Image (cartoon, rainbow, N blue to C red; front, side, top):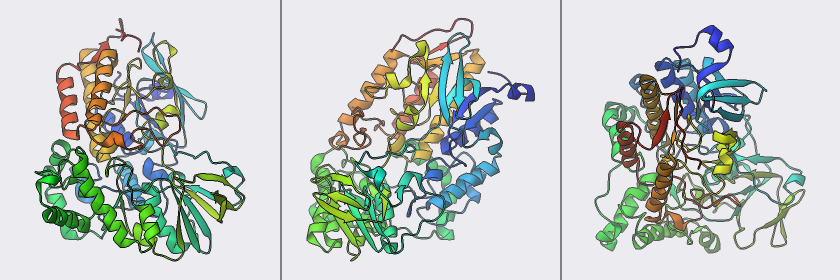
Length: 552
């Protein structure tokens, strides 16, 4: 690794590190590398910073982690100066925050926007990466960091006739940057995951009629969103050190809340119901934290699932619609639990109808309708809320070639394999931020992002101090980690759901539980211990005699 780059070295377009993506991970990685005196270049396919929040502009888009916690902690000045307006920040405000960070730390001068990374190839002789971008240029780097995001590659459904539909078609994860007005239109929305649940109430207020096509009903908890008061902001700011420590070390999901001291069956029926009622009234993801065994014990889980189904039944007036909206085929929380604002209430509107496409899948889309069970549901516009090729999709779009020319897609054909979610054997000096095999999407993403970026930065310092040129995951260590990730997952109820955690939303994608469910504190300690032992499980080499991991 070189000292800070001179203008001459920058002109040759050789960097210490190339970062792919300018979301929250890529921006913080760039900031840390600068502090280490390393040269870095970020390539971002979007026209601005923000990652997921740059692309996800659909109606009602907002974070499901409270604003005061879904924020960077690396700068106390930053967390003291930024005023979040609501308990759950809407997408425009999160994007404004991302832009504020980019400006405050002068990050844009090292970011190249509207540039996709198409190919990255490792040269074993020089121990460097050759990175080719969509503008036809190639740069070299000692290291590549994939900050591509876990939810950044839209899943486009393969539905017969979609290409002949005459009206506009919008995907929630690639929404137009200008406002869309559905007033007076018959709108169809396909999908009832998080983006569907957030957008349905907003679109229903505009549309002449909204038809919701649902394959699998989702458990959703009211957000109870509200403006943040100055007193609430001050309480967070005054207690940030303790709150951040709790999120990193004590909360399994990186979210500050009370920790349960008992299981659901340790309380009587009345006391348990009172606790569920209190959490329902409070709203948000902490509903699942009321007891410590809801993700482990099916009987305990049934008490929470039954409570939410009751609430849906009480809210939705039409019994047939209510029944269709009540999930019954998987435990609550094993698919990403949603939080909403008036989602179930929206089905009481006279201009909203629900169509079950689980038992009767969409046959085809015509020029002006969605055909289900021989019936044409006429629509003027379509919204595809069909989610993402999560965790691996954005990586798979890049032609990444490691030792011997083997591609990462070839290696991951039967499911992603990583060590700690940070590196994959056979691909030296290639880091992944919040990759498969790390807590990632099961956590407050910014907590996990900061932990990974800091670990990578510390690792680069260690390599520089030790005169090391290459680093990669050891095959045996990787295999043991993949087995551990799955063993921990199968000790829970999570694999009982066909979720995107398992890749089940993508036809043909291997079924493997991708995130690490052991908890962010446990995971952080594992990573720290491995670093303290000289990066145990990683193979490191000097430039003169690079050591090689066995072919995986």
